[in-house]
Image (cartoon, rainbow, N blue to C red; front, side, top):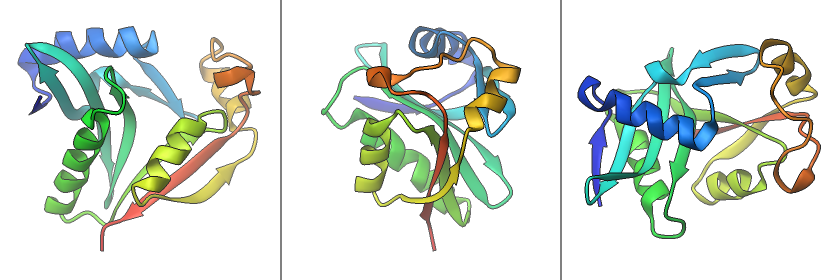
Length: 158
């Protein structure tokens, strides 16, 4: 497995991967529409195929993780990508890495907490506002859990 920074040369392949995983290039976080085709990040490649991707953006002294996807579960791809992003944030002198996930994403909540992230904020009924921007957001999510809230997690780098 090889980790590479997203660059313009590979942008079309990265965007195809995002569309395959998310079915859209638009992500809504805390009522803000974000275009993932402009997100920075790293991808994992094996035999010239993309097998994982982490995207993020910089906001002030923070790195905000926007997406983390791995096509190969439990092989360390996602963790390697996450560590690469965290390393970039540390090298840039940032104070923290943060992310938002939804209340149905128990896998993400478990994954990030095991890697040192802490839940710091609960945004009750945030998906009601998100649906005003992106009406196709479903009412139920993973395991038919009602999709209602956003949860913020952070990893302090200091």
